[in-house]
Image (cartoon, rainbow, N blue to C red):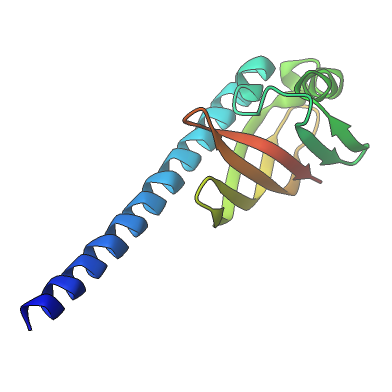
Length: 143
């Protein structure tokens, strides 16, 4: 009977540890998105891009098609949002954060830009991977 109790207790502690870890991951991801909102709203596109994987394999898929690489993605943002009037103030609505495996999640949500040149809203899906202990966006589909 004692062995059974220890087994059940061990399984419960293991499951609690997993859910705690997932809750921590989600909290870190939400903080990353808050940091993005702040950087974007300050017209700090380089700061906004710090949450992206700084690699040529980064994938961004938007209205202009597929862009590969961190530098090209940043250049595209700078071209489309040259001033504070274009970036405006960013707010995300997060609809789902879903675990893919132990080191990756996808996030589905909405973005809302309040701008002098006219508001813009849309949806996105990003894929994040933990790289060197930090969550990084490795793929982004926004429209």
